[in-house]
Each structure stands twice: as C-alpha cells, then as structure tokens.
Image (cartoon, rainbow, N blue to C red; front, top):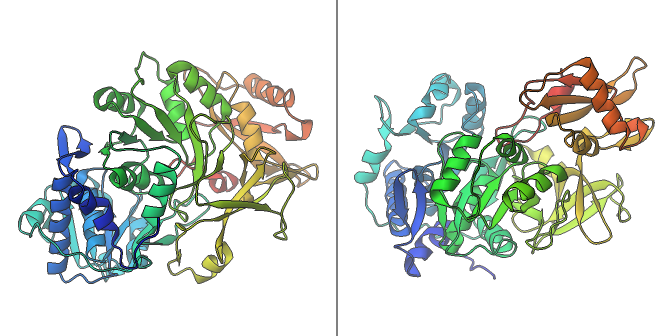
Length: 511
C-alpha cells in the first residue's frame, strides 16, 4: 500500500480510527482508566493546540520523559500532528544522559511525569539553553506547566500540519548496548511500514486484539507493541506505568486478558522463575525481541503455559522487527525469517555473500530505516549505505532460510585461532539447572590470548562455589568443542543491561 505525498502519521494512527467508526472502541487501558479512540483524538488535538500556543514550529523537538500512561500517546501524536518532533527518552537514565539528549536534540519543550522529576532536577539547565518549557504530568510546580490544565485550556479541534510522507516525524535514541546512545531520525512513513509489515503481515493483529508490552514505550520495540501497532488496527493497548516485575506482569495478564504479550528474554526468564499457578490462556501469541531468545526458555515457557514465543530481531534504526518467527512455523533458537517488505544479506568482511550456514555480518534493507543519526555524520556513513543498513550483528542463514544469531560483531572472539560466538556458549550454559542467566566475553589468559570467560547469575537458593564453576565448565565441554569451554566462571548478582534488556558486554569487558 503506497502513501500519498502529503501524509501525517498522527492522522493515520489516531484520527482515522474515529473517521472509520472506531471512536467508541477502547484505545488504552491503564489501571482503572479506559480511554476511547475519540478521547485520544480530542486530547491529541488539545496537546497539539497547546504546543502551537507556546510558539512551537514544525520540526522543533519535544522531549518526552514519560511513564507508560495515556499522556504518552497524547504527547507523542499531538506533537507529530503539528509537524513537531517528539523525542521519547529512557525513563531510567541519569541526569548526565538527559543533559546530553536534551542538548543534542535542542528540545524546546520537555513533557515529564511527576514521578521522574528527581533526575531531571539534577540537570544543569545552563547546559540545555534551548529548553524553554517544562510540562509536568501530575502535580505541577512553580516554573512548570500542568499537563491536565494545559489540555483543559486548549481546543479539541486541530488542523494537522500537511507534512510530507518523508518528513522528519520523531526521534528515538538507541539503547546504548555498544556505547553512547545515538539519535535515530525517523520519518512520517516509518511507523506505517512497520505496522503493515509486522503487526499485520506476521502477527495478523486485528481490531479485537489486546496488546500488553512489558517493554516500555520509550524505545522502539515497546513503541510499536503498545502504541502505533494497536492503533493501526483499532485494537486496545494495555499500559503498565511501573516496572514489569514478574508479579506485576502476571497481575496485568490476569486482570486485562491480553491476546498479544510482548517482552524480552530476561523478563520471560523472570516469569519462569516465579512460582505459582498463572493463567495465560488469553494470550494467542507471545513475542520476544531485544536479544536472542535461548531455545531452552522457549521450550520451558511452552511447556508451562502452552504458549509459543515468537522470537524476532529488530533495531532502533529500523524501528521494529525485520526478521521474525511466524505463527505456525517457529524454529526455536532462531530469529526466524525476513518480515514482509524487508531483505537480508549476510556478507564477509569484504561485503561478499557467504555460503549458507556460514557466519557473517547481517545487512538489512527496508523502508522503515531511519534517515540518519543526528549529529553523527561519520557514524551514519559507516552504518547506512544506500538502501542497506549494517546491523552490527553476526548471523548465519540455514538451508531453509532461517536466520540464527551469532552475537554482536564486536562481541566475537577468537579462541585457538577460530572465531567463537558467545551466544553459542551462553545457550548451553542457560540449560544448566543452576543458571538463571549468563554472559560470555573474551578475556586474555596469562599468554595474552583471548579465551571465553563466563559471568553467571544463579537461580534463587543456589550458591556459587568453585565446585559449581568447574561443573559448569564441564557441562559446556561435554556439549561443545574444547576451545569453546569457558576458562573461568564468575558468579555475579546481575548482568549489566540497558533499560530495554540488552546485555552490555562492553561493560563486562571493561571490568
């Protein structure tokens, strides 16, 4: 489906639902609150109208530090409707991260949840001179604008900015799994592409669906799962403002009965580790992304709940999924097959195609790829090359066209002169009955040679010991080649991760 040259994403994802008769449908459930599509449309208009009153012009940035509540939807689409550019920021960042992002984006307005003000208060405002207005969702204070009062004082009708389908629409900062976050500039048509290709083309998402995402709205995966994808079909989004702990996730599923549940492998592991009888019968598909889903987690989840997890891979740069397992043809342990509208290539260090089954660098082509990284010209040229984007992932493709993750390109290590994927070792370790999660990196031995080294988080009630470390090494050696055996095992209480659940191996390497 092609888009007209003049296209505003807010009118497509919000106004269209009202125009097509779904105004009375529940768009958002958040705790006891129920919001219809008509109410969303009115509040989006009020927010956009208020921004225009503040003098906000098209392409000016509006930063969002918001919990997963309906206010996120109003702010995000309200900014887009007037041609301004919402920039959702990680709600778990620290003051220095916000200082960087607010300064880098040049945001004139910040919309922030009252509960998240503490970290923002630590910012040196002199370092973000373009920030003029702070809008607080909750109780406002002197010098700020109250979100609810601002909406109440604004018009419920709003003419959309006639933006081009290729105009800048919103930014997302990459999660920082390999270093500092980068601002990915996304265009008006990008969300449309992802909704058509993945939500409709893979999941078969439809109006009766109820979508619950443990992954938060501030990053690409959650933004699709819980906002624009359900809005693309007039479905219901179920929002959880607080942390997705296992008890809260089970409580949400019991209360709201989602049909589609989106999470990350770490969270699926937490759910499995939580004892009790829980009913997931409402869930027709569970979806995983953010990092590779170990086959053992897939098997254990299906055995316990009777639900298959559809693992997939996407990125902030590509906005959502580009390779995914399809319902009815899951290959456990793999990332699946290309999503409709996307092409994948695996190449060697000279950009030549590699044979089936051989590990190489994954390149993706699709029309949702960001235009560029803001203020990162060299990084843009290195990553986005014509129609193709270098994902930074190592993959191989089997004879049946399924793609298998081998790790980040900069995570690979050579042991005994042979390339080793840390993912392969981790997938064996996670099968051990004592292991909750783990990470493998390369560490130099006494001769300065890189060898696999494992960091292991044990399950509750299990205590680390030299004997257990030796047992884990033996467990791997019995299943993989000797050179892949971890030369050391360190037990840790947790692994360093981004707020989206991606492992930060570079922090382990820096220890």
